[in-house]
Image (cartoon, rainbow, N blue to C red; front, side, top):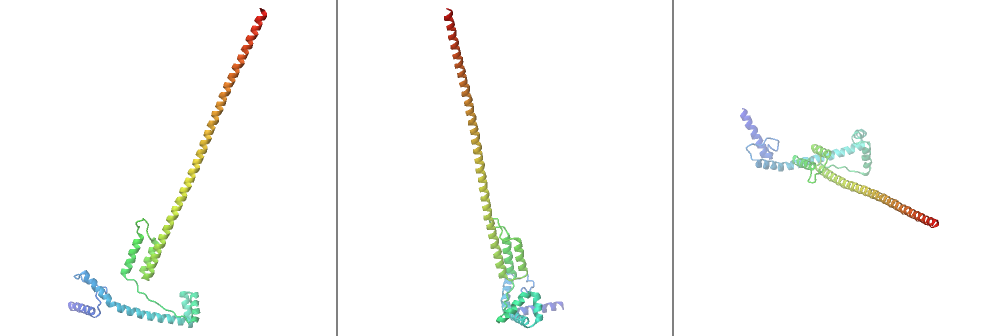
Length: 263
């Protein structure tokens, strides 16, 4: 009986697949281990073709239901005080008043539905995040950790893929611009630092030259004073010699006069 029941289940599944084109793999079942990988992928691709008009019909139905909900919300906000109080707690008093004011201009509200990103699309975004977080050839990454975590959270919540791509591109571009600005600022700071160092070197050099000039000036003054002292000494010596010479000559003259007088 168990074997018969199992055969009935397998027959039913194959019959459903034959009528709808939905394979067990597409419905979340385990692939046949004996089937080739390419066969399984082709089967899954064919199932997507079958599901496309079904999904399109579901999206169209959701679109119409959502537009009906929007119209009903518009009518309730316009005519029902309790509904206005309820929506005030959701979107705020100012937004409710803005919608009531817009009603005076025959406003019409719309709604657009977008499919959620599938696993493959999310995987591509995850790979882009991983690549952006890694260091590039210049040794700089393209995004910060907090931005990557925010985008991963958006992916986990299956938000609009176009918005996620735009946000990721904006964050990467902004981060690179900030890093480029920081690099330029760092170069300017380094140039200013080098300029200040050159100024300090020039000032120190000027001080050293001034000190050297003062030292040479002092040496010249000492040499001049020494020469002057030497000249003074030589002058005094010559003067003393002249005085002694004149004194000796006078003494000799006095002796000669005395000798003549005595003779």
